[in-house]
Length: 83
Image 1: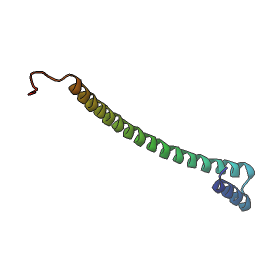
Image 2: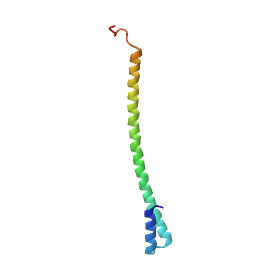
Image 3: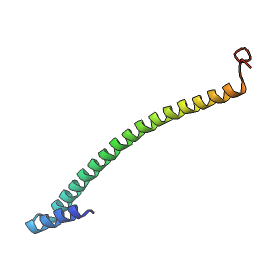
Image 4: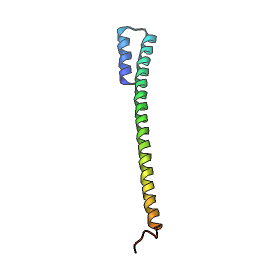
């Protein structure tokens, strides 16, 4: 359990709340925190996936450009050369 959940549990115990209810309340607070954390992680993963997609496109364009330069070097058009 996190420190905040333990503090809530202790505060409910001091307040005189029955054991079963203070445990249930502490678990509920922990679940809410966990869901919030999972939502933030999910949003970050979606953002990272978008960034990766852009990088893939950029890499494809760079590879195509390099291949075009290689092909141009080895397969010169004899009609276009002046030498």
